[in-house]
Length: 152
Image 1 (cartoon, helix red, strand yellow):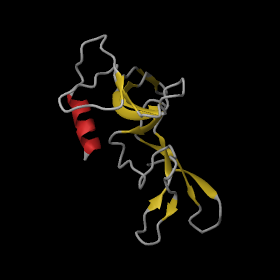
Image 2 (cartoon, helix red, strand yellow):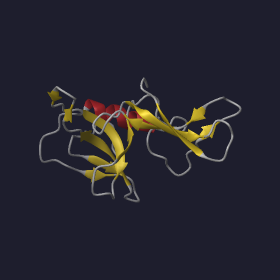
Image 3 (cartoon, helix red, strand yellow):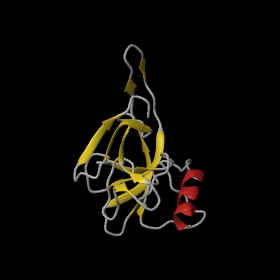
Image 4 (cartoon, one colour):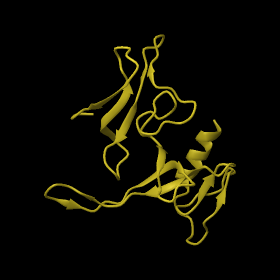
């Protein structure tokens, strides 16, 4: 429930005066999280905040887009490396995206039938479901299988 409060508060507070960047590991009801602010885990490994993607070039048409996302990234890596993006299908340990976290699971849950697999981003600036996935071999062989899907 607390994460929902954080996400809700963060989404409502996109307009923060410039120059007010903060770094903390907690946020209170009514407190804003602006585009330059981030919540950093106590161990400093992860950060939650807003990030912006750059431009994208399509085959014959060049389109410059700028999109903002709420996400969690690796805070200790120099290049922004998102590990989780809000509302990308159903992200959680049950539905991993393109990053495998310690404690997460891959493979088929024989009780529920849920097949946990890693799925790529659509491209370098869009976290939508991409065309590549990696999963444990459904045949039961002890190996990973990489798949390509033209219509994700």
